[in-house]
Amino acid sequence: MPLPSTPQIITCKAAVAYGAGEPLVIEEVEVSPPQPSEIRIKVVSTSLCRSDLSAWESHNIFPRIFGHEASGIVESVGEGVTEFKEGDHVLTVFIGECKTCRLCKSGKTNICQVLGLERRGLMHSDQKTRFSAKGKPIYHYCAVSSFSEYTVVHSGCAVKVSPNAPLEKVCLLSCGVAAGLGAAWNVANVSEGSTVVIFGLGTVGLSVAQGAKLRGASRIIGVDNNPQKCENAKAFGVTEVVNPNSYDEPIAQVIKRISNGGADFSFECVGDTDMITTALQSCCDGWGTTVTLGVPKVKPEMSAHYGLLLMGRTLKGSLYGGWKPKSDLPSLVEKYVNKEIQIDDYITHDLPFEEINKAFNLMREGECLRCVIHMPR
Image (tube, rainbow, N blue to C red; front, side, top):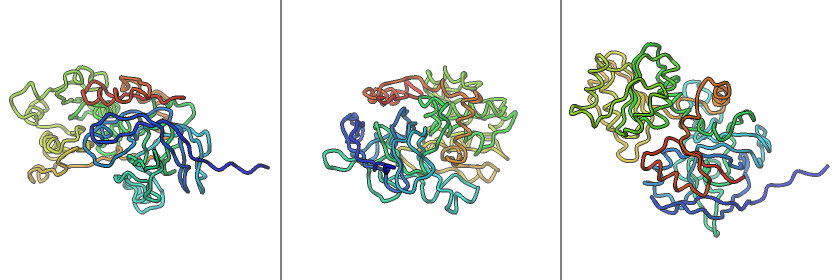
């Protein structure tokens, strides 16, 4: 009986960022074999998330391969990996689930102490990279780096999904759509008949709207200064839209006035810490809950008058909508397959890999929700 072959270095195409805001360069890179507890994935589809755009515009870790919202097929597995085999369909996730650390076992959070959000551009396991070009290392993004034909991830940062699920659609569940749905369901626990206000009507905000609608919210107020996004929002469950540019008074006052004292739930999906204060102000006294989902590009510190909390408001943070990736994501994929949730309408553009810079431009100009980038077969 022949011994299984040992994975070798793969040479493939990847979109490499060499500097903040500089166009990505599609070139050949070398992808190392998966190390212990890792898998190597052939990326099938990957979509552009706003956090990729923000990091590309502002971070200083380069050269780098961005991308974290992706689907693919397992090409090879590293030593000790028993959960996956070649040919499995998977989604990548930017936070993992080791299932053994204190936080994973607590049942109280989806944060993992071992496979948390990776910010240094390296692999969790050995703090090294798996990409190189011309003999020099290329850094990762969120320990996923899906803007490459092949990538290596920790086995705890991938989730096996049904082969019946279309990979070109469900890739959105590896970040944006799942994050919004989970913020409404898991973090805020939106109640039937409630009033919801959502600041920012991108993919995440509109996914919050879908989640709130499915929970039976009676009013879902969307706030955005992009008229195009306001026009499209009602298809996702938003009942009314507010453009701050149309009012002379602060938008929080507008929301409180039209909602009879403030919303039951507010969601900050912009990535602006000043907007968190506005969202808090837009909630009602007594039980108003604000959930912040956006990742700020500048000014990470926030400030708010203590009286907002003293009067009974709650402020919560939400990372990936509270979903525990391995435990929860397969059932979310099944909900899509069973037509219980929608994904397709968030995809406004389908682009081939060689047009990835067009995707960045579309998102920067606010002309898309999600661009799905299709990798060469």
